[in-house]
Amino acid sequence: MNFETVLAGLPDAVVAVDDALRVVFWNGAAESLTGRSARRAANRALKELLPPGSSLIRHLAETIRTGESRSEAETTLEAPDGRLLPVSIVTAPLFDRRGTVEAAVAVLRDVSRIRELEAEVRRGETLAAAGRMAVGLAHEIRNPLGAIRGAVQLLARELGGEARFREYTDVLIKEVDRVNRIIQMLLDLARPVQLRIAPLNLHQLLERVALLSVEGAEAQGVTIVRRYDPSLPPILGDEDRLVQVFYNLVRNALESMKSGGRLTLTTRISLNPLFAKMDLGVGQRSMVEMQVTDEGTGIPAGVREKVFDPFFTTKERGLGLGLALCHRILEEHKGAIKIDSVEGRGTTVTCFLPIAK
Ligand SMILES: Nc1ncnc2c1ncn2[C@@H]1O[C@H](COP(=O)(O)OP(=O)(O)OP(=O)(O)O)[C@@H](O)[C@H]1O
Ligand SMILES: [Mg+2]
Image (tube, rainbow, N blue to C red; front, side, top):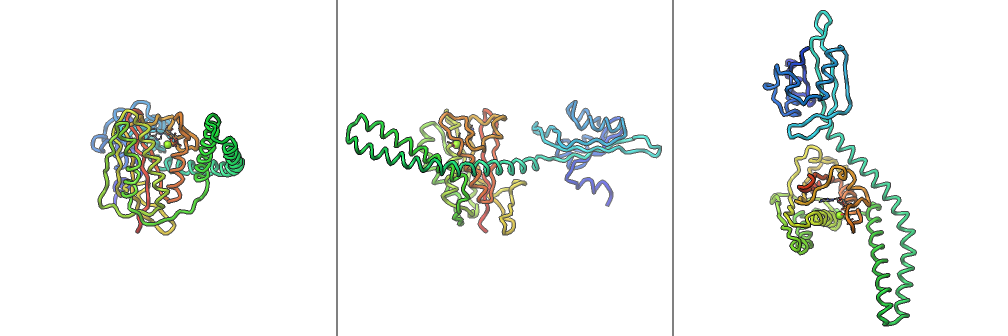
């Protein structure tokens, strides 16, 4: 086995240049990272292949000039589809027999998956902290609310049928009930509820949610499209909790499409490299993907990191608890949730759930 075969098989991109910054080596991972084939890259100047000012060019140029290594833990590289990928870079000089620098080599690693996983962990931690606070608060609020509700009911009875006062007592009871519901949602978010896990037909659950939403959808000119994989195996989950998740996602999708569009429900076996298999504590399980795609407003880049935070909302009447709850429930299922969104185009939320096998 020669060294080129070894380098070709590395998951990290390896790029070598001569002292005029012309490419002399470009492995397979470099091809997929940059979208340029080794054949096209060979003997070309690096600055013809990458955008000017690219940190890879800068680091290699400095290594050639100084004969020293350079490294950067996180910088960005433009991917073939125009996205900016987070990558780490390390460069090293290659010397000729007389000790002058004749070439330099760079190793680039795509760290986007690591960043995604880190974000996932951080999100879980914030939710747990918010949850603990909520439980304390909720208990303090629930008891006085119970007392208020009881007193208002007594008051309503004392006042008899007098319509003038009835209106006030009705408002009081309705609002107390609303606060109670909010507290219940908070508690749901915080408590590690006991899941009743069973094998489930995902499509049946989705149809229940579709049925609940179809009227609202039609009223605002939204068509519900189904893209179900008919060979999908049963999943493992808690029926009521998952319906809660899907209902929240569909509601968000509808709320983002005030002037109509398509709401697509997709199911498939997951091939996502990050989430296709998960360890459920009893060994690795394959996962299923359930996607809710809308053609709504999309989520602006600055907002995207916050959507899972409890109480983060951009809606006038939103609580900002929907996605926090979804995240929580999927975490309990040892699944995952992921959002892809393009502002002005729409949003796809993907849930990953374990297969019952
Ligand atoms: N499909 C979507 N399209 C556009 N923005 C979305 C979508 N889903 C979520 N968001 C954004 O994320 C925010 C948080 O969503 P989340 O469901 O947690 O709370 P909410 O919908 O505002 O309130 P609620 O507690 O009633 O669900 C929303 O306010 C909205 O800005
Ligand atoms: Mg919501």
